[in-house]
Image 1 (cartoon, rainbow, N blue to C red):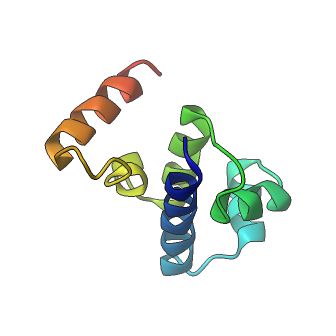
Image 2 (cartoon, rainbow, N blue to C red):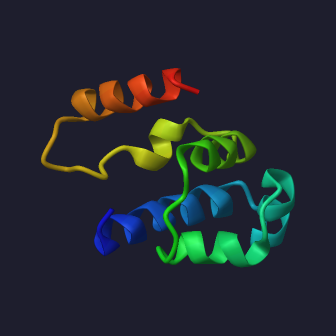
Length: 91
């Protein structure tokens, strides 16, 4: 994943976390991840696995689609949702 998309992904995670009013520390605790890792995700420095994205979405009480949609703006949202749904079915 390119740097711009990683930053966008991290930004969406940060926004969802802040909307829930929780700290990075609390999110890390809920997701069984380190605070350092959450910070690096939010800054776009780390590429999370699909399993980690699903875990974070569950902890933030949002759909994984809310975090991932628009990462590939050249495709329509329905196509992106279809691709993501197919990946989630593999879990």
